[in-house]
Each structure stands twice: as C-alpha cells, then as structure tokens.
Length: 219
Ligand SMILES: C[S@@+](CC[C@H](N)C(=O)[O-])C[C@H]1O[C@@H](n2cnc3c(N)ncnc32)[C@H](O)[C@@H]1O
Image 1 (tube, helix red, strand yellow):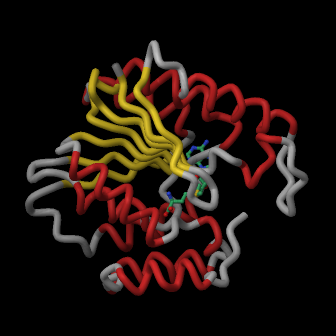
Image 2 (tube, rainbow, N blue to C red):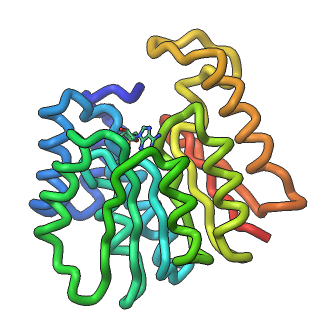
C-alpha cells in the first residue's frame, strides 16, 4: 500500500514533471472520494509508463484495472495517432467514474474503450482486435498469472508487457507488511515474476518504484 502523503523525493520528482491537467485531477479526486487514492498510480510512474508507450510507438494497447481512469489517460496520451486503448474494470462504481472522465477526452485522433466485467473473461473477447502492442497489468493481484498467459498469446513479438505492484509491498521477499496479502496472492506474484524474468521469453527489467514495475519485451 502506497502512502498518500508524498515523500520529499516524490515531491521533488513531481515538481519536475508537468502538472497534471484537470481531467487527471478529476480521476484523482474520484479515487479520493472512493477512499482509493493510495491505489492510483503515482504521477512519476504514470509518466514513465506513458514514455515507454511512446518510445515503443504503441497503437493497440490493453490495460487491466482502470479504477477511475488515471493511468489510462497517460497511456492514451502516449499512443500513436490512430491508436486504441481497451481498459478493463470489474467494479461498476470505479467504471462509472472512469467513463465520466473518458467522455470528456478528445477522442478525435485516438479511441479509448472501457470494458466492464471480470478481466479474465473479458480479455478473451478482445482477442480478435489483436495482436496488441502492449498491455499494462494492474488488476486483481491473484490473477496476474492468468493475465500473463493471455498477454503471451495476444501481445505481438516485440510488444511490451508492463505490470505494477510486483513487490506486493515486500511480501514477495518475505517482509511482513502493513497491508496483508493472502498466501495465494504472494505465491501467484512470485510465480508471475519468475515467468516475466525468463530470458527465453522476454527481455525484461524491474524498475524499483515503490510498488515495483516489471517491464518486459516479448521475444
Ligand atoms: C490498482 S487499481 C488500478 C489503478 C489504475 N490502473 C490507475 O493507476 O489509475 C486496480 C483496479 O482493478 C480492478 N479489478 C480488480 N479485480 C479485477 C478483475 N478481476 N477484473 C477487472 N478489474 C479488476 C479494481 O476494481 C481496481 O479498480
């Protein structure tokens, strides 16, 4: 669980980056009102994700775990002209807020599609739109292994798989943490991390953000 009070380091990094625009602030406000500000992506990490999407010239991208649409906006901005983002969310209270934000985005050059439902089922329905240039995994922690299996089949060779929260606040290396994770969540994440680190399948790196971001390029 990320602290909602920013550290000096985060304050400094944020001061270097462009201030978030009004729609990003609206997503943060919606998350705050739901009591979920701490699970929204940090600005510096979101900026990194956007830059990776831009560097890879992504056009077709999938996000698992929309919340109130904050990280989706960064990914959307990073997409090439003509790009499309499919973002999946299970919880209606989160999805309705995200949709209210997306309805205000200029979608004349790119499109964003909010898919409501359990990602494990909804991902299969997206297959016909693929292969995809990338996926950002930020949904149910106990399902990361299933999301990766889908991504291995539906992200193109040279495409990108990004995954957030891969440290589970330190639980994956046995630290006892304030936020409690189930044995299943820890086991699934440890297995997920081993698969993402497999050099026969990916070129990968871990970016040691507070929660840990895995970046893998599919061979
Ligand atoms: C960490 S939040 C996502 C944060 C968002 N990516 C951001 O940074 O703005 C995780 C989201 O995944 C959603 N979620 C959890 N399980 C899910 C599932 N099985 N299918 C789709 N979404 C799920 C939760 O409701 C929550 O909104």
